Image (cartoon, rainbow, N blue to C red):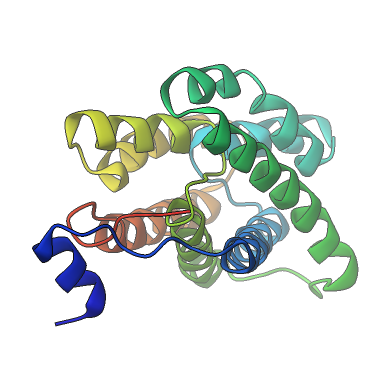
Length: 212
């Protein structure tokens, strides 16, 4: 039995994360998400939630995905502030800003040569994004938008965040029919499934309680 399980079983609060642990989790989580987003953009894939909307606008207009992602998330901070508190909102604002930065930085400093296989990119990118989201969830932050809503619903009503996230992803994927071919659409669905699998498997309130 782990020390964390003993704490939960014995009724004691788990040890809080230090500021250094929070900082490292933010950098690792947002860099993973940013890399996954950069891979998706190179392969012409989409994902769900506000990122999916940013991708659609990016493919339509050619505007920077990072800036679009940052701007689209702004209205969701109101829900985060009301339901999740000031600390969570501030952490999420920083996380979204870092994802926006890393998604652009990766494509500049770590450019991909040629086209990427949409199926493998969807799988690997989805896993990277999912693990990045978990790192942020476990340090009381998210990447905004639907993640805020999913985290709130799980804490309030017990509905798994991964299932809710996947439902929103499917709706956004419907919009992919307007801008993507079938290989990109299938790769996007693989990415959404991989990301939701990671979040649903690892983000369980009965197994881990974030303390920061």
